[in-house]
Length: 278
Ligand SMILES: NC(=O)c1ccc[n+]([C@@H]2O[C@H](COP(=O)([O-])OP(=O)(O)OC[C@H]3O[C@@H](n4cnc5c(N)ncnc54)[C@H](OP(=O)(O)O)[C@@H]3O)[C@@H](O)[C@H]2O)c1
Image 1 (cartoon, rainbow, N blue to C red):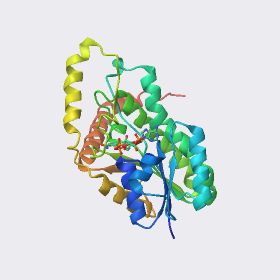
Image 2 (image 1 turned 90 degrees about the horizontal axis):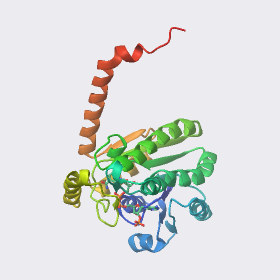
Image 3 (image 1 turned 120 degrees about the horizontal axis):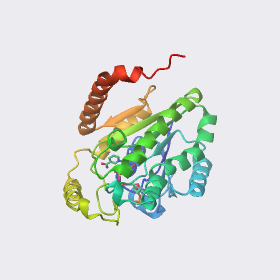
Image 4 (image 1 turned 60 degrees about the vertical axis):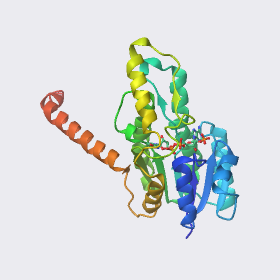
């Protein structure tokens, strides 16, 4: 049976690779992007297999309209991929609430908007998959990533809870945690920076930004291979709650888990000493 995918941020980067991999697999794809023409330019004209739609995920009305159009054409959404996102790079003190609101509007509230729109039909079908694309920054904080990490940690807490809420309806949620992948992510057209510089941070900001610039185009992760892995996961009867992508992220997860275990062990006595004697 043909699977129907609904993918956000499919104009370029990982979202476009997932759409292409699903089309190659013979599946049906609803590919959405802020500019429909960008999606069509990348994936081709609409066909029996493909429907391209305008969707800025920060816009709840557009999210509902896109889901409605998807159902009208294909009758179902089997796999929802909440992929649209970008990184705001800046030291927390140099960012503003406006920066944070924009970051959350896409990376977190965008996922909420699309999931709210798609869940009723997916729940009614009593089967389906939801992939929420998080990041290594969703399990690990780093300098310059306070807003981005906040958005992805929140996405992970949301996804883990949602997984439990919708499991009785036959829906599986998988959090995808890529390390560095060679998409447009680190290009100036995708990244955002604050404009509230504080002199104390000048040196570190310049060094870190230069290091991000150097990594652009050098990331070891291949988004085509990640897309193929996601096609495999979508067909697996028991997909994981978390899928860590790339050896950098796998090694970082190992190190984080080991550090958490060690800290838990070191402070266990004090931790349990807070139990009440009621
Ligand atoms: N590449 C990495 O190293 C990496 C690592 C960890 C996590 N990720 C995550 O992977 C996901 C995909 O990123 P990518 O690497 O493919 O980056 P990318 O090449 O920059 O692509 C980002 C995509 O998201 C879309 N987008 C951004 N804001 C949007 C909005 N408000 N509504 C709809 N679409 C929006 C962009 O659309 P436009 O073309 O309209 O700008 C583009 O299609 C993101 O969630 C990112 O956080 C990436």
